[in-house]
Image 1: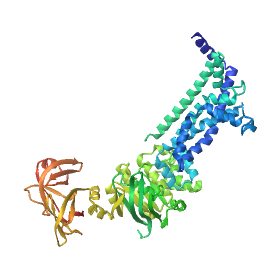
Image 2 (image 1 turned 90 degrees about the horizontal axis):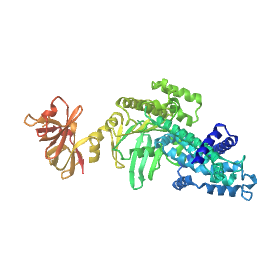
Image 3 (image 1 turned 180 degrees about the vertical axis):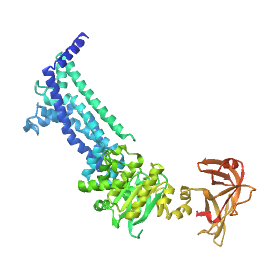
Image 4 (image 1 turned 60 degrees about the vertical axis):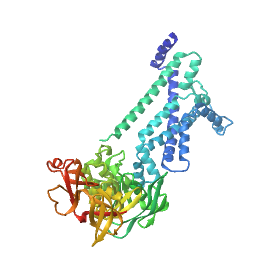
Length: 236
Length: 361
């Protein structure tokens, strides 16, 4: 118990004094996960919107598969990316293994289903008359999809934030493809894992508090967006 | 109104799972005409609208718009000439001006053109100061007028209105009805109007189609539909509360005498013959109620019975009397009339022979 209490006290000391190594790890985590979220959003939002808008055979199976992939095991993504970017893999020439690029790649794969699925869910929650109105006003497919995404922006943004939360809290894949190299690929989650195994509880707790704070900020942001969304739905 | 066919539906069927929302519907709508489609909820009215606007494809049958068959390759061209307004007000989460102009934007009009036409449109609605406001701040009536203006600004030749006033208060309803009339009168726009408000159909339509259980059971002028319904279900829907089964005893000089549970009832014969099974239909507001023994007013046609229920319906009172069968009449809610015709009172119900309608079968 004393160890935990002293760990917490030291953790606050590390945070308050802006310990360089702790800050570096936190910054890297944020950068990697933000990059991954932006890239995934750019791919997954249009993908989700296209899947929602167009009718095609097997649409339900596609949506069901995307939803199943919400729970995609991170180590499986790590293994897949490892095989792809290792020297013997098809992307080996880019020499991405044990770089932050490989970590971004893994996180992108991990969260694309979440953003795509929640985009589809967000668009599906719009009134069907909205889609009919856009179609009847003779919008092109691109105009229709863009308008619908704009109408569902709060739901889609919630999905993006949720995906960011999943990316930054992920440990398995980034450990496998990033290698947890100090000053290079070490992130909050991999550092916590390593420091705990070495008995460095204070650093682990400090990093844990930072990770938890980020999660809280993301959650607060989601709530804010949802509240605003609900407010916008109110009849005036 | 001309004989140029704008909408042609040929044996349209739409099936959802095991439910037939539309069942072999055939209908023609002509240029400049206002056709009201009336029917109860779930009759298939909205499905019919979506098929006319090419938002849904029929399971079978053929749709032609402006003489062109609806196909994948003609859809885009035809959509330029069709506009639809739904019961639920659809507004985009942007300014009122952007909402009104969005259809023009989809059509690739220039920003200056859109701004000018939107400003003009809002001015004609008396809503010019609303342009910069968020559309979400509008009331139900204002929102529906803006949604309607958005459709009108695209200059449709065919307007599809799917119960557009169902959620509006009487004042907002009147304003929207005025807009519908004006659009039809000024631009000779063909309009199909879905409504379950029969009086709205009477007010606006040149012709009415009655849709029940996915089938068109009758089309005709408002008078034909409201006073000479083709089926018992249609009669019930358009407000005939008294429907008495009987059989025709004699037909003479255009007048049929029908044997019913309430006794002999005379009616214009129409096409019925002696021996036919018919339903005698009477509109409640055309039946006069008087106390038995105080003399039969006017017509001389009627039956006696005992009041079994009295219901106050605002400006009128609904009196149902047992005359062998139940007959319902509406009387003006004058002072104390509910006490005069209280339950158990013997009354005489009378009507004009010409007001009785016979439905075959």
